[in-house]
Length: 330
Image (cartoon, rainbow, N blue to C red; front, side):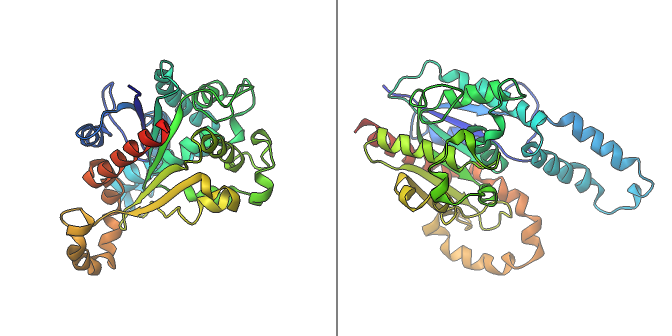
């Protein structure tokens, strides 16, 4: 029986103790109640700890530090958020993230042509994942992160690795993003879509431009699955200040002719007490006054992490997995 692998990757401000990461446990448990999966949980939260400590020490060395407000927030939340976000810009630290992802990808070595890989990416994790899969900044042989990035790319069907056949590896079954700021790649897409589709993925004008590599993946999958588009669900909580809509952004990046390759839908998270759209509609109305206050911003961090415990998200992901089983068997 084909196996559905699900790779989870977290976003900003995730720190854990112990050997096994637990941040995805609640969502995994909810998924396994309705569908069999094999989870691959990536944890990269510790790779920047030393640099964070140095940054805190630098702040505390200032004579004005003790006179500032919100010191705990500055030392903890702000430093972690800024430090994690810097991963995308720092090649050295980013390479450590690539190593963490590559270690999990190695578990796919025993997969077959009938197996599927589903990507569940939260927050900055979605940016990191697409960067590792498609950005040309990792292509230079022998550079920091190159070997791990090529291990990741070579494991996935339709992604261009280093002088390998892109039509090898496990096929993607779906993409799930939660609280994702991945629309930032649109600002780095320096060439028109019509030009992007004619370029070799290794020759992108911007080293952070994901479009040529992403288009190649979508085209390969579309052909392999006899015209079935790749399902993508983007979950956004209305109170999450990081999450953003993608339905009007990603298709524009891959050109009009390629929109048929992808089935991307923005999904608004329910905010009612029952956390189900039909049941929570009335309570959504009650929450409208709260949504206009500064308290909503202060609570944004809780909403940004709420996806991991959501039965609604688990239900939607399970449906995507079932859908992939049908389309991949056709």
